[in-house]
Length: 143
Image 1 (cartoon, rainbow, N blue to C red):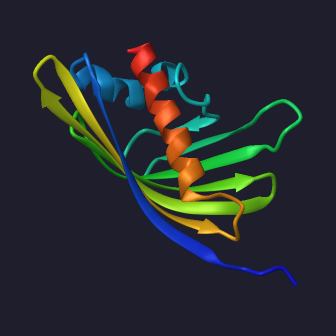
Image 2 (cartoon, one colour; image 1 turned 120 degrees about the vertical axis):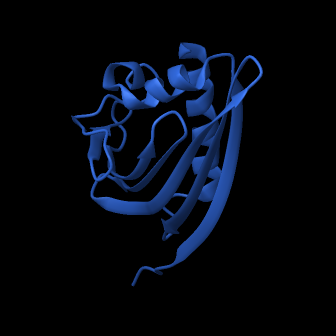
């Protein structure tokens, strides 16, 4: 029998962008803008209670399924969502994420906080945090 366990973790990643909070927020709120730095969604209902859904992955590798429910959206201030992440048919994590947009001189400070439950060693907080940092760097390049 396979050992089953959960690793709980929270991580915070901060980035400062030379763009207004409106522009940084729009990069999350508009599907065309978001697809420039994140996977293109099959479903994108950007509203409280709405869903975002995408499937994809590297050629020959696992298919990752990202399934989001938006819990709270305060335009240009914060986005809170819960999501599951599957690798092929295996659930690897469930998370709650808060993205905050804070005006600063010359731009926006983005604070990304993820609280996750990572299952059975299929994913780890360290790997997720590393991927999040790369994702937010890509966002910065597109801005």
